[in-house]
Image (cartoon, rainbow, N blue to C red; front, side):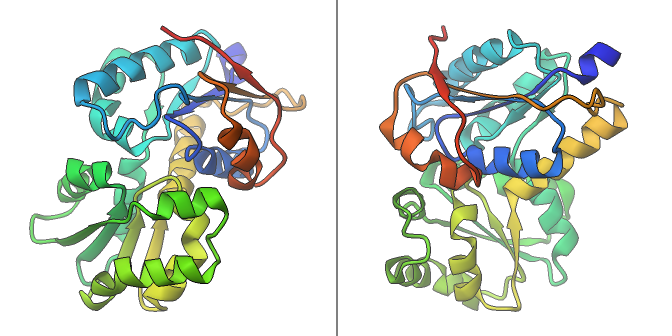
Length: 270
């Protein structure tokens, strides 16, 4: 058990969005070692079938397991929707996805039982947040979902505070703002980059749930409850792997991560 405490947390995403989850975990758990895998050779997962996504998840997970991780974070909404239960059933280490923590926090925050969810086309179509919210809450809860696909390129281009972002957010979010929701889940790992713009458009009466923040909190709770928090006092190590060279990844990763990006290594996974 003592040796296992010092093993790293493994995090994977289909690309770059999962770095917002990594950022929150690194901020909250300052002593923990991190191994991140971005499956840039097969991005995006959202256009793939459930069968294909599960195959991808198996190979990314096997790679991270080879690094002796003590906990796995699935920092991808599509992978969380399609494969989280499979991973929990088959792995001996704890597994954390991004859907359940966000849904749980939204259920705690809502007063009027009206919750909004925004995400990519694939995430909204999967109904993953709606299913989880109905598991946690009652069937009488009112859920309003809206795909916001242009938020992803806005975040990657660094236009999150540009007037273009405000105009697009108004177009996407106007109906949600008028629907009576009091909580809005940011159901894509890119969306925390646009949090200020989204908050400005939605107004003061609507609470935003950042799934990256909530995933970090759940990760800490699990490590603490299982007495797996790192305590050796050494400087932490952070390793970043990609499955394909990506100029886009390296050029914007530091902004998503909130700190200078350590060097990346390209790996082949089966």
